[in-house]
Image (tube, rainbow, N blue to C red):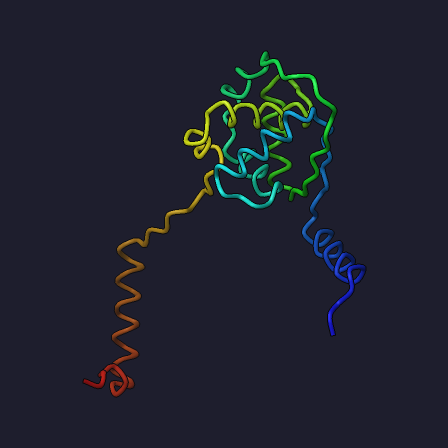
Length: 163
């Protein structure tokens, strides 16, 4: 039987609480929400929360600050809602502090403006997913090889493949 919406929402709320997620709401001008939609389209991102998290993680405060004087066309306000975990919230507050104590809303607006100003190709650097490179040391590689060979000597029958 399918789970109803209330049950699903309650389960999601419990998960958010366990992971110490915080919901952020930023009232921004409509032009900003359209720019975020453009960024998501250009970079094939479906969730606004994911796009905002990547903007925060890959933020360049100096480049973002250069967008502070950009004039937006007058339009009605929109609301950007997203959930963040403690590490991302700390990073957002760090950026806000480096921008002379700017509000979280102002930082989000500047990050969106900065990435959008870079255009479809240039915005990819602000929305790339950081990947960790795993490099095994020589000692770890040698230990792994020795353990693998030791296991093969104990049970040598299964390393042969049928022709």
